[in-house]
Image 1 (tube, protein in one colour):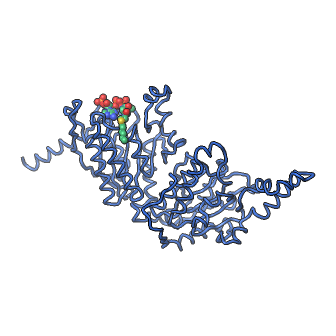
Image 2 (spheres, rainbow, N blue to C red):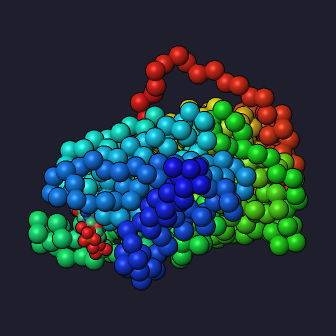
Length: 515
Ligand code: HXC
């Protein structure tokens, strides 16, 4: 056969493979409001950058008439490309081919592209749309998942791993996304659960829809499994494109710098954000935007544990991980979920050389039977662990309240913040003035002729003495008490001089964080 004929033959084979599950299956996919797997990859990557591999991989299963079935690409598309010029390895499960179910060769294609990502030290993006383990392939499917989970774990903290849930992701399949760094979901399209509604009904007699059980909102607001929620696949891809601008290719690198840009100070007036009354809330994201380059802030897990705000921005053109209590929600307390959220984000930033800026305003850990029984001791310890463990530059600014365990936990000097600054509005104490006065002056108040008057007087005394930054500053726990308008200048300088920071950690295989 001539080269021309062989090329024609190749083109024919490619065309056939590119049909995926065929016109009818594609029609069904589109009717569900979903893009096809290939469309998804093309939409996400830079134009003409996608290079596909293993297009001709075929399954070798024989049981249950599988030997009579041809599954193009074995239901998954894999390859490499770029996003904003940033190289990535990618795979997308093709639901039009056997429901994107995972058989042996399907898994081998995924693990091969994951191995490339690890060898090349570039991110891996997985687009999940699958009915789970291919039932006809039995234990080979389970083996395939096991191989993926192992690689997810080995790659954790080495290369960025991004999961996109664009269809069902059921059974054990959910554990690959759960092991990755960022999970993107789309309203009405993403569905994640270990056991579906049918099983729940037959075992427990409880009825629930797929959406209510494991839809995008559930995982964004309640479980915290998802990090980014979108209304459409297109919006979701825009968010992924934005995320990759903040993160480095691997733990060997730093995120690419951006041109420095001043904050939009007309819109975000740092002196005006905190209300005069210390009991009044405000949106801490305005403080972040009042200091970050171009007032940019890309929030992570926006809908989950909103009493804690985490996300990326830039200072001096360099990516920063912001961690901040949100006084607008539950007064910014630390609880089970907010501790988990912050701890995970801190560990991400530390793994990928992203400095941390922490903004503090919280009354402490949330009291209550629910919290105690939900394990606030164990979960709350995670934030202490992750800050203490982190060796990237750590800058803390105390805006207002920093009471009790909350003061320690929010990257205090004692957990090795490199620099701690406090605004004149800061109140650093063991607990709030009301609570403190009621305890230490209990007898005086109880025995007074006018207990309420004495109580007010004692609260005022306590406030005057402790509800300020100067006692902590006198002990050197605060490096500088600064005017709010000086925050960007101080933090930028602290980051500049911390750029070469190298901290040695005690020799050990790994720690045992309070998982
Ligand atoms: C083989 C599968 C499959 C699977 C779907 N298909 N899931 N084939 N193994 N796990 C096939 C269907 O037979 C069908 O083939 C095609 O994909 C499309 O599926 P439909 O059911 O027609 O689509 P839809 O109505 O949209 O429903 C999607 C679905 C449903 C909700 C995902 O297919 C479903 O419930 N699948 C099984 C989900 C499940 O129980 N998975 C867990 C497996 S065990 P045809 O030829 O008719 O087009 C598991 C354990 C892993 O995952 C443990 C790892 C640690």
